Amino acid sequence: MKPKDGVSRSLRALTGAVLIASLGSCTTTTEPAPAPVPPPSTVEADAPVAPTPEAAAIARPFEEALTSAANTLLGQIRLSTNSEKQLLVIDPLIDGVSGMQTIATRTMESRIAELVRGSYLQFDLQPFSAATVRRSPKVLVGTFTPVNNEGQTNGTREAYRICLVLADLKSGTVVAKGTARAQMPGVDHSPTQYFQDSPAWMKEGATEGYINTCQTSKPGDAIQPAYLDSILAGTLISEAITAYDAGRYADALERYSSALELPAGHQLRVFNGIYLANLKLGRQAAAKDAFSQIVDYGLAKNRLAVKFLFKPGTTAFIPDKQVTAPYPMWVKEIARRADQTKSCLQVVGHTSRSGAEPLNQRLSELRAEYIKKRLEGEVPPLAKRITAQGVGSRDNLVGTGKDDMSDALDRRVVFQVTACGGGSQYY
Image 1: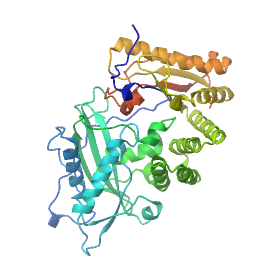
Image 2: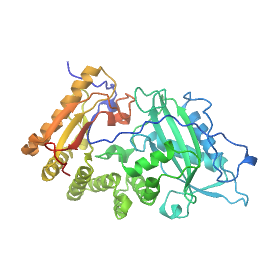
Image 3: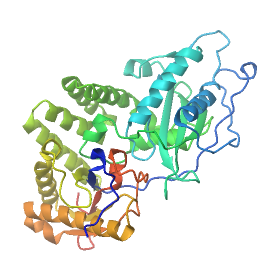
């Protein structure tokens, strides 16, 4: 009997995923309580409103939960005494664990924008751009996170936690917050095109700063420095992702390249984007060079996440040449750069939580061994510096068990740079 990781029968569920990575631990937080909507006459503009105990942590339908969280957030800011509208931008919402934009987070952003324009005329909603950010607006950030019944990002995920925050760049503080829980049925939390196509993944400081500004802050707290430091680069990256998703690959490449010129632009999202845009433009040599940069960047940070898609229950890549065509180059570059840096590597396989755990455990081991052997085939001396193991579904990041693109990160192989022979690590 072949091992399975509980994949559904739909075509989209016929993908497993392998990530070669050293993944940092994700902070698990309990759902923060939303602030109440105060009466207009009692709240001055920008006055922080302390959250009160949450009235109901029961998950509601997606649209209802989003509307509740958004009204709680936006209702805390009123027209200033001189009736001047307050500049507002929305930094694209993300998944609170992976940092990816998804179909659901894009929908949330669109609904919030409609709500602002229709009901909250105290705001002047403008695009998230460098020019607008330099005017010190209020920035709306938000996360959408699968959580268990205790509001934590481990165990069986039962709902989505919506977290919305208004951060005032002029004062450098959080000025409003709204949260809610949404039911899972009917929500498409699949990554958007750029994030689906990206060959590599890791959680970085800029993304963690965004997430923490939303999830761990309360009105009156300072905005996370990691978020502030990267926000201008973030505007270029956001524009590049939008261009890529719209098929404007030359425009995307230009914006990714511009972001790379900024100190805060040295992010995996940028290296991924340069690789993808070159690949879409048919620039194979440039794409290969860009992928080598991805590998070097990961090794330098002691973690590398490269995504492979497998047929369910097997160690064979999916039979889609359009998807798997770059895989031989990926494997060769990973092996070559690991050899040149004399890195010692530990490969750890993962699966989603669906399916019998003993079978998941075995499948995770087999996929880790498969990737290990592919790398050793490219550079035989690596055999002395690579180990492989599996952990089944014990360390899920998404944890929904949907076995489609929305939880591809749970079906991964982690590839970590380790100390060689008990000595210092090589980078």
